[in-house]
Image (cartoon, rainbow, N blue to C red; front, side):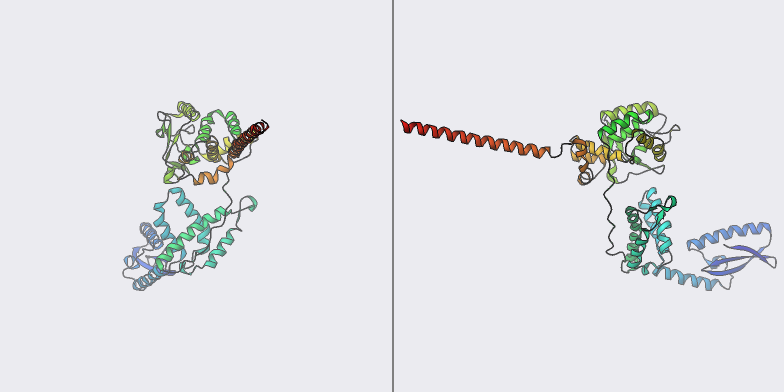
Length: 414
């Protein structure tokens, strides 16, 4: 950090630039007012040095070192433009890319950079990072411990998340500076199937019967619409159409801020069942006109899902002796109930905000037997009907054959 000093009654600045200690005398006399004035100038200098836009000669035009330092800065800039460090290029990449992301994802990437990537690769030239470095880094992530007494380690999903920005940064750098992409043939770690543990219909009714009364409309809507937590917490009254019996999903509440939905396909219209219609009418009498949000706290602000989980969701599950699971399982429950009821899969996919039925069948169909207890009945009915038809036809032929033989015997005896 730069400092202000005095020599022969004049103030001079002692600072570091390009890792070189520099001392430059000013024309300011040593007075409190001039020290205050110079402090502001130094603050601006340090900001420009940090941003890489500091012009030495502009601040100290009569300095004997001005030309030398300017030339040194030009050489450094040329070197950086050809061989930037990982941190230098990551900063450029992040500033260029963040406009494409919603705020929550910007924060997520920034956290990954600061916590994992920069500590490992910060000062290394981006072109010098090799495949072996990447594999070693990924292996080290599996050994990272966190939580109380460091009892937990990073999950496979989290490790994959950390590697995504790393791959993107190196791919962009390789394209710009024309070196071989080191992140080649490094496959994503295989993850376990998504944690899908829907409620049975009996469990749904049990939960809704015992949940705190002022949260019953909230959880009724969650269980029977398949809305994501961010979608229902960010639901506003102008997106509830009672005449058309539709809920329009147009935004999501993430980290207390409204933003776009998870994907473009997540913007959709959800049909209100009678249960949901009644629940929202009940909620309207409580919050409509007091808040723009359908579900809100006593101050009219949107719900904070961590607080709701701690005060309502978890205690209710514990009270009923139900297996603990994330509130997100209400979304999975809606999907399995719709499938069990025989709704059109394409309609269900639209309600869920899926682009096709592929994910629907891949993730949810295996849970339908737990709801209907009738899987395999269709093929049983087909086989039974086919067997009865075949046996009936066979019996008819045998009877006809017996009759013909009897008539022949009678004619012969006559």
